[in-house]
Image 1 (tube, rainbow, N blue to C red):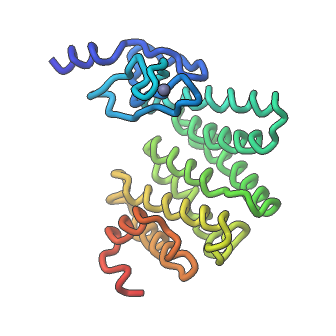
Image 2 (image 1 turned 135 degrees about the vertical axis):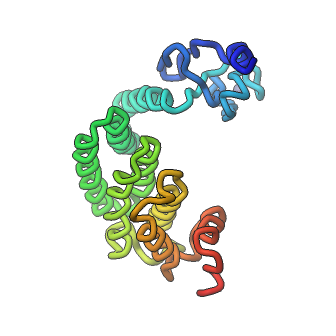
Length: 256
Ligand SMILES: [Zn+2]
């Protein structure tokens, strides 16, 4: 019965995405977006319980599917390629730089999804060098979002050990107050973003089901609490991060 219901709700072949990615037969969508770029309509949902509507709920225009992971990975590549073309045509160097870094994180995850861990580690090394260079050369550049994406990509691929290869030097970089990790988070937007992303990455690792009995879990929890509890950082985390940290170490805030 569920299977019949699912087939009725979910077409066997999703329509192409906004950027022309065609998911294979049987792929699921876990969301949709409006095809009118000025509308911004869209929704995420459990693909077992909902299906993409033909018409946007806000404006009645058509819709594009958002494929669920792992097909999302292919859709993401099509999106990045389209943005790269746009940056080239418009001569937009800022967009071009952003897309180049997103492509690096995409490539790293792609190697992991194919089971090519060595290639992933080579890609990680190159990405790390380029991020450090960008941070030194431009104090407004925020590397944290890319490093967080590397961690999420490794966890999505079921590889918490490779995620640690991203987190460990990152924690050291922050501890040593390297480029992009200043101490005045109130006025330094880049440092604020970078620290928040680092804490988010540590929390994502500790919250992953595969790490509950991991040999380095205690180390990672210590890194998380030390980073989040640093004098210049602790007042600048988000509400959900504070709640997650309290769950990791009950009574944390009372001990300040
Ligand atoms: Zn709409």
